[in-house]
Amino acid sequence: MYLHDEKALLEINGNIKISGNALFNNVLQVQDKNGFSGGTLLPSGGLQLFSHTRDAFIDFQVKEAEASSSDTGSNSNTIRVLQMGEESSLNLYNGKIVIDRKGYVGMGVIQPTHILHVDGQIRSSMSTIATASDRRLKKNIISVDEDESLNNILKLNVRDYEWKKNDKKQRGFIAQEVEKILPNAVQIVNDTSTAGSRNISDLRLLNLDPIIFDLVGSVQALQNQILAERNKRIELETEIKNLKRL
Image 1 (cartoon, rainbow, N blue to C red):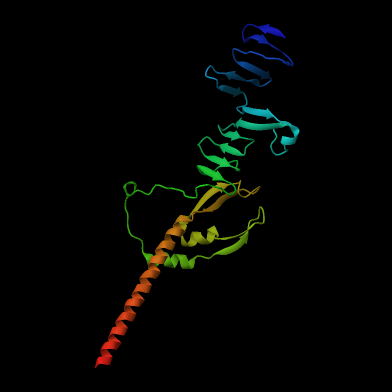
Image 2 (image 1 turned 180 degrees about the horizontal axis):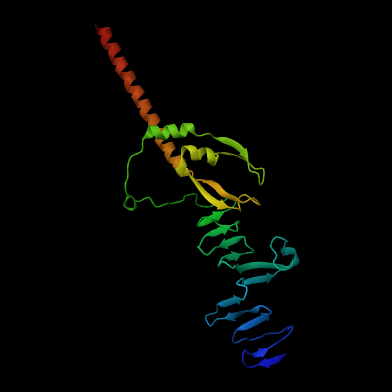
């Protein structure tokens, strides 16, 4: 232990152990061969961390029974609850929640491709999702051809399949097949988290909204066909009645 007037009031070259309370009024720094890292307790009560590796983090020590190999930081009794990455991304609870520098939030994914990117099922106590749809926010509003919507729906193929990552069986659409019919229902992104270890540079994501809207148009088209057939039947019945009167 020795004093160093230029850098700090007290500088320790080696290990230090504090078994009681300690009060630090200024910045607490730790130096290795590459530079300084440390933290500052701000007057407001906040904690400011800095790292020469641009990878500051906070670890919590936990009981052995509570720790698992998937949650650990440097050892089996440590959980990394917060980490600031080199690209200004924020990792919470050992990367289970990620906030990148664009503000995108990932849950269960390391590199979110959307404002909210979730790998898994989402549970909500309120099943309603409200989206902005005010006429005053839109322009170039035109009516949709219901017959075109019906033709689109009739071309779609519903498939049974299994997910490769967990063999889970599901029924739904194949994005590449939908893309040929409704291109605006498919988005292409660069994503590695969904594909596992494979890097798919043109991963297809499916937006069901255009399909739902065409389903509404299809119902309207079918209703128009039913009404047209009903009118024809009424006309034929009227003609038959008139013929019988002759």
